[in-house]
Length: 384
Image 1: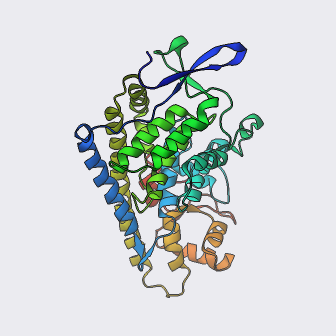
Image 2: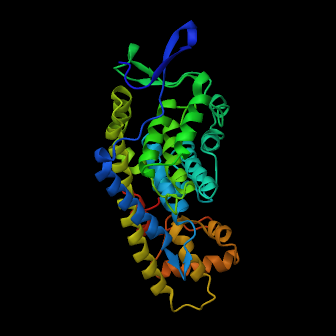
Image 3: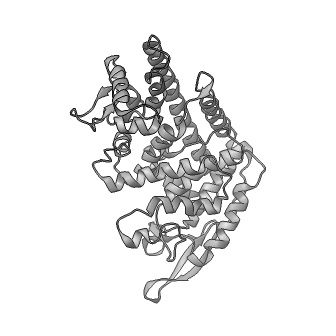
């Protein structure tokens, strides 16, 4: 089935001619066909966006709320949709000074995904250049030299996926020789204006995933670009339109939606689907943020009687977004105190029941805030 788009020949291994798909610039669907989904997603993402902007202590934003918590949760789920096994708790522990996880290589790639988000969320980046920046961070530290050598580079060979509707059961994405031109079209469409911005970025994502411009990690890169581009275009105040959690839970629907658009040209169905994913994720994240605010309120009330210059008051907002840590992590993160004074401050939080030791006593003792972790990790509620 040829469907919607173009097919170009590319010489594969062994002199075979491969039929590679190049997506067209997608037309915006009729608003009548997608409006309920647009309204729902706009309301949900907007509510989460406003709540993030209003999440403050003494009138100041709580540092790291998006990057340290919500972006890392998205990285866990977006990577999980591609087969990663690292949980949110695993990632927290990997990013402490202990640097450990059940699968360190897997955790390292999930951490790299979150780090790429943090590096770009405040920049006026060019989307095409951002693809390679994210990809470089994802793969530059992979132990396999053949994989790490591809980090930050466009694909050199046609990539493919299993598809029973394609010849020989394989569907080939855009041929390497057409990637540059296809991405030029994609970037122009992504940055263009007209129509609801969430609809445009849903279609941009469909287009990107069919180009598949890098060897591996295209799903993670493409999903990460959605919240970043929306913020870059000032459609949201924060980079917060995450998709990973809903995609992880509904991977078959996601893959089938991409394919259906390609085969039929019906991108209204795809748009409704992706907007429903954005709405689902935003609603769950808004609930988490509201509960996080309740936790913060209880913590502030519990520590109100301590001296105003106590390190505890600086620890409270830091621990809220870094709920697994060592004394060394806290010293580096807060940038004040000595090992002894920080250890004492952490001990006070533990005595108040706000945090708890998560491993045996020692200089590299791990501490955790289990009620914060429980908001973001449904699989495991405490750090080992």
